[in-house]
Length: 636
Image 1 (cartoon, rainbow, N blue to C red):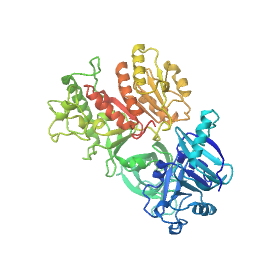
Image 2: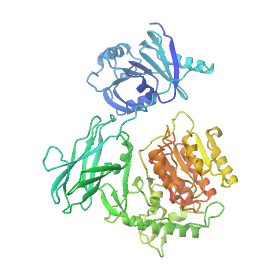
Image 3: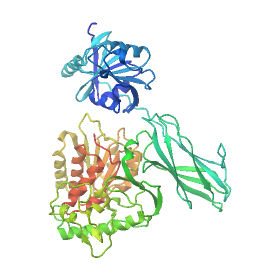
Image 4: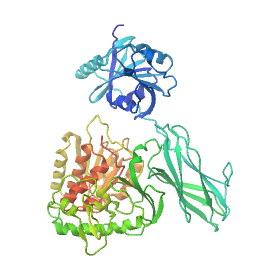
């Protein structure tokens, strides 16, 4: 079989993204991608076929997977016809000719993705085939101009030569289809009925509330969820259910007895993934008169297709007005939240944004007293949040949750844990362990590991979660918008710090007045929007929606902007302080955060480690910084 000629192009994305875009129009994709094979073959039994699903930017790929290297000949292969999968993923072998197997599968109408070595010759390619390779930072795509044999090595050489001459054209990935939100339906029925009822409910009568997650985009696999119904004046009810990979979930039923008064009876329906509330809606049942209705209050996923990482969370607090629904691995329970809960004022830092040991201890003790009071409201029934994991806070947060202190602490004489000296100013420091190395925490003890923001990773997402900001194939772009009224010398110093860990060409900056900020941000396409503004300077911004999902980092309080930036403009998240911070200190903190994020650290861990670094200088204001995003969010 003669070698073939190719039409070669390139594009940005991952090889599996292009597999999703090219199939099923192309019935054979020859690919050299060890990372892609690792994703496809994860959990594949030796000498057996299996089915798997891989999520890509374009769509979910469902594979029937078989590693040909485990078999001495084609006659020893197991049947793959009954293994489900829209595509067949094969790993090539050098021991025998796999071309007849590939052709047989293609004749059956099953596109084949053949993983092979870059220098291996592959026969049986034709105009319905594509060869995929990698020439950083591009995926290389080559379509044969006729039947024959080819190898990816020759395709890569042709791509690099054409790119060197400036003759290369590039192919963009198709925009992923806009997935409709999965509806969560609530129906009221009489006990034992097979269909719902409309209209008013009788006071003091028994009914059933049915709940179902509707159909939507196909999921990578079945998802275990839990429905929780908390009607006012009634105990919280909880039922687990499974959302299948395709189609709607089964109906979940809750028995209720209506109040004796003829009033609109309200409550909350919450769908949990593990301990995390991913969908919250208010339910109003008409007792005496009216119609049933529901209103969406909060969601972390529109499709329920991206919830797998949330299974690692250890607890959540869902804030709904003057009360919160707390989940710690047991059944969720309501607690009352009192007004207040603000952070104690902190002043008197030295020129290096730190304090001496006695003044630092005073600040830490003030934070502990305030945080212990807040923790007391959350743990009224004795429920304990396990340290060391990820804690999710959702809803209208109303309090700086990083300073929640889970050890007993009251104002008055207290005992210092040895960790205060070790990790505080002038201490030995070193790598921070997962838990406090000191075993004794009896009495009124002050320990930095008692704070949620230091012992655990804290996330406070405001809307649908994002997991990555920029493609891994290119440098992260950072845009600074700076208030012209700020100190110019401090601003220039901050920009110089950013250029110490990011290439200068990846950073752009401009002086933008607060009144012009909305227009400037709407036209910006950087991955990180860094807003350097003074206290009270940031006003609500109006942006119809970015075509990408940037991370917004501010140097001044921006809690009033979070909902608009995330749920209207589409930001991946916001990192901001809860209190006013000196300009120089704010630049120092955001520089540490961005350095860690640019280095590949997840956002939650980047914020936690920045808090510890500030603590080592005698600065407790790290506990005043909030991550309004998922803890697993990465820049690339």
